[in-house]
Amino acid sequence: MKELESLGNEQFRKTYRRHGVKGELFGVSSAHFGTLKKKIKTDHDLALQLWKSGNYDARVLATMIADPAVAATVIDDLVKDVDSYPISDAVATYAAQAAIDRKKIEKWMRSKDEWTSSFGWSLFARVARMESPFSPEELAEYLVEIERDIHRARNRVKHNMNSAVISIGVRSEALQKRALAAAARIGKVEVDHGDTDCKTPDAAEYIKKTAARLKMKTAKAK
Image 1 (spheres, rainbow, N blue to C red):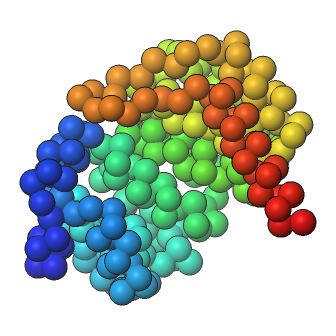
Image 2: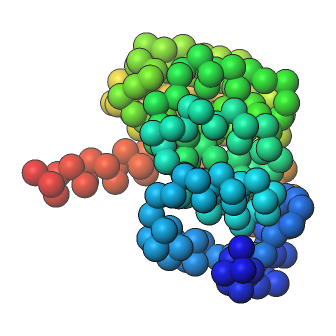
């Protein structure tokens, strides 16, 4: 905690506050987080202690050094503490490395609590690019659900639903066509990002760019 405090600065504290971070924080940069992660590697006991501190920076580091192999035993407690989109995304990044039951993911997605639902969709968007736990057919069905519900969803949930459309669209060429069609019908997704320069990307444009980049990467590998 002393090391984290020494690495913080006022500019990052202001930035994190504008992005909705609540409670105690030091303002540690992503570069410093990366250095600490390389130094500590995996230390699940330390991660749990850091999380319990309630400090934002400590919690972000906790998600970076926690052991994904035992994520199922702690993830519910972590999700209960999610109160902003930066920490939601940090926990989702950690959870995406683990074998989280799909039913749990779907339960979070359908939560009435905005941050829990936002976390669920953030995690879904990450695992949608993977071979499991959702099949291509199931992802196609989710496109229908997103198209139906996205404009009436809560603020940060809308953003992560949009991210899910993008992820589904880069999963395969067949899903790409469906996702592009859905994105065209959905149109612009309005999300309030507060006093920040953040924007919710145009799903169709992002899918096309990502698909082209992946295609080029595959060609170079061959």
